[in-house]
Length: 375
Length: 195
Image 1 (tube, rainbow over the protein chains, first blue to last red):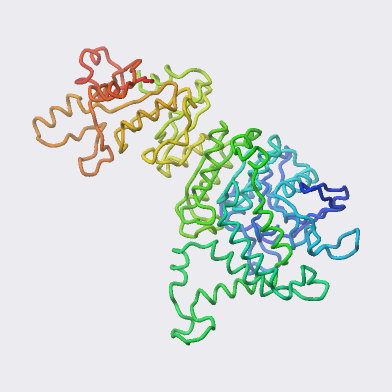
Image 2 (cartoon, one colour; image 1 turned 120 degrees about the horizontal axis):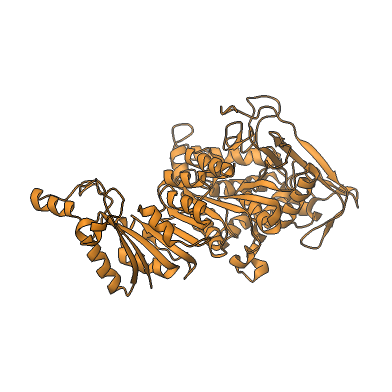
């Protein structure tokens, strides 16, 4: 087989509709569900080489390749998914869905509620990571995948992989839990709350019914993204990338974007506010805040991990302060205590929380070794 | 008998084994094949960790010097500390910790009381550089070298009992003469200890 590293190339999104009622963890119901997803590579005849890739807070189903032009922005995990890459599409069939509540095609706040024939908006029910995993299980059924070779993801994606191994222990062989945490800290929730308040207090938010009046709380979304983005980077990464560089080489004594870092954050905020739905952002930050698999076991994580059968690899990054190595160690230590198969790696990286998106050499080789060691 | 075969003999079928400083996972890999053990390695070298993953050996990246508090009492049947104790900052803490975590522990140490080391120091007047301990004093990671006698005295101090000892020659064999005066003749030794 060719080991050359290349791109998965041009990809197209697919979608599937489920007509049966979906009962959510909150007790609410969804009458119908559409999931948009992409796949890369080929499913083998035994159906044993399927890997589910789970996206993080603002991600979507487009995790590798490009739609039209090779020069366009690639999928969010293109550095890791493709022929010869960490998740090698010569070997594996990669499934990458957009999660429930998203704003890129899967049923979410921007979809039409079949009951009222109107956009859900803020009336879209609260969802949890368990609901996401249940929807991904429906997608697996649809694709004829009984057991995932692996479920893998970074940040909130890692939490889904963890949830998979608890909720469907017989349907997952390996779990790759990267840059994640067993639950959010008060500081994590605080940042999410600032982001939510930025959106909710934007006059264009209109109690969440902004689409009905043809508006969008872009200022709020922009601010939310700017705050979020700071937590994805490390102090060192920001110093390396921007330092105190000035855009025009001199101080202008004003409130324009003088420093490069200001300009960068504004730019990131602008792009995001144009392409992301505010209600989805609110929903997903709340879902993150709620995540706590130990909650059902009186806070006992070891007990919560009891059902797990998968071989787990937990990876953290030294410069990640959003979900620091200590948070990953909580997962790994509880797995050890629960007598589970676990490996733990702490990768040196300067990219902060975003490190999981970069193809750092050691990180790539570790994922490759972990995914491939059963063959 | 090689070090590995001694360890193999002392580990029971299907035992839960923790190898601290597991290197590239060779010991665990062998024990997995011959004794169907449930193995876990602890290692800090990146290359070694990757090799463990490639061999399908569970491995935790952790510095033993930072403590082993994440391993609970008697959680392993066997804890192996092979050719590692001499690089640790606190060998006595490590010994107390491994005997807490493991029902049985296997410790292998290089013997600084070997006649080659003694002669080298005596005649050259310099810190010995031998094949099992090939680095010079300033560049070595072996910061806590000891003789078999030193090790046994430390065990006694810590109320750790030595159940068995096998002396090994420099070419990793156990010869009859080693046991006449192990502290002089053996290049290293394998201990089975417990508390």
